[in-house]
Amino acid sequence: MMVDRLRTVAAALVLLAGGPACAGTASAPVLASDTAVASDAHAVTMTLLGTGGGPGGRVDRSGIATLVQIGDRNYLVDAGDGVSRQLAHAGIGDVEIPVVFLTHLHDDHYAGLTALATFAYTLRSRNLHLVGPAGTDQLRTALAAMLQVSANIRMVENRLPLTPDQFLHATQFTQNPVYQDDRVTVTAIENHHFRFGPESPAATNKSYSLRFETGGRVIVFTGDTGPDPRVDELARGADIMFAEMVSAADRLAVPPQVLRHMDEEHLSPTEVGLLATRAGVRKLVLTHIGDVSEEDIAEVRRNYSGELVVGTDLAEIAL
Ligand SMILES: [Zn+2]
Ligand SMILES: [Zn+2]
Image 1 (cartoon, rainbow, N blue to C red):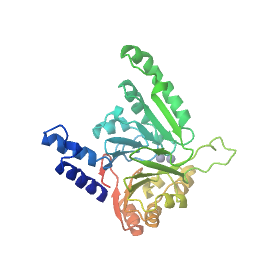
Image 2 (cartoon, helix red, strand yellow):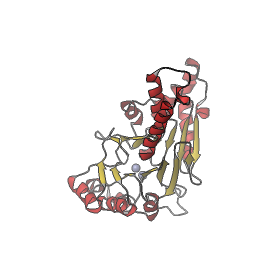
Image 3 (cartoon, rainbow, N blue to C red):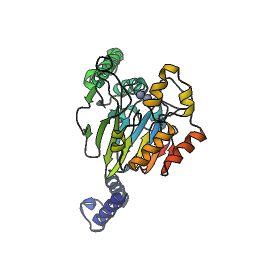
Image 4 (cartoon, rainbow, N blue to C red):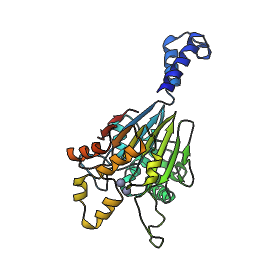
């Protein structure tokens, strides 16, 4: 925040001094606008596009997806069911999402990617880049094959310049940072959401938590995870943490064979509060949730005294 203020002051001084921003124009309103754009390059806005956890459609929450806007850049974290429509609600077109981060490859985290990708392609986005764990290459190939079915028509009808295979890109997590540009650096660490032995057909699958650093500020996504000291470390000192939570009602709604997964590989209200406290998180936002009761919220608060937001779809979250 302070950095932004300093940038604004610096830009204003340039204007007063008749510096480069003034050159060649006498239009005061244009200058004011240009100054605002320059000073807002690292301004952060976050929108909870969808806050629902787990597979299956819900009437009260769209699938998990969070939009991070840094200046004029859009970054999407997970792409649950309904994300294209939720972006429309937020005033963002499918073509305005150049990169999607996937915390892991459970279907509730990418079910909406099919619509987002195919509409972005048809509407002439230049490319879509998926950044995620091992398996993201496979997802990219499968998505490209699906897009090609419509592209067989659209490429002729609309003279689209790219094939789906040229349009879709994927980078799998190998080393940190997993992504970097002039606005943000993204770090991923493996968390505790899967436990497969080396002989399991699912053994190559891993789940991750993500840390975004931009302009001296830190935004953390737990993704789906149980308690894990690696997540504590990743979230250390975060300005904001988007955390999953399984409520008491969510726990009771699953069949018996899924209970161990819910108890050990997700966060209870007690555990999410303790995590936020251990990591010294300034603001905790609950998302990837289901039925949250007053008692669940009280349990989080018993273990965490910082700012707490219970996520609702399309809520804007200030840093
Ligand atoms: Zn999930
Ligand atoms: Zn999951």
